[in-house]
Length: 136
Image (tube, rainbow, N blue to C red; front, side):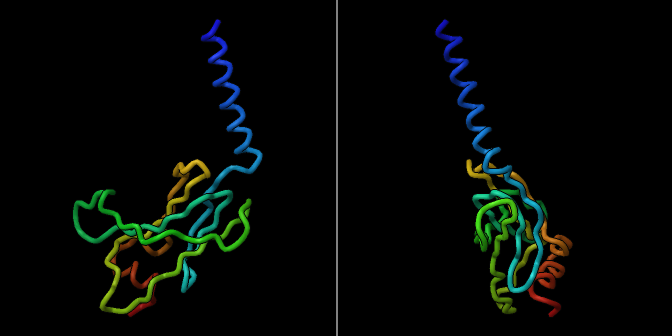
């Protein structure tokens, strides 16, 4: 009998958690784009957005990816959020050597809900630099 009560309590808590998330809306990562001087991320009900770079080289593993920083929400939380990440200055002596730039979005529980690569920013280091900074 005690086991049945425990199962019912756990089930009720899980339904309450899902209902709370559904009431506030389902977190979604809708897209990412470069609109200088920012990387712009569109989403819904997100709690955090990170911008990452895949460094140049061979045999690069995810543990070697570089966190460039976190985007900041520029409007109210809800179904049509806009997140902005300021592109760092493009001085030639600090050129970013990356073959891909991507964003990852997280829900209110800290769960990664998706990844989007930036358009024109996953075709090699020269293409990434041109997408972020313009043609040299």
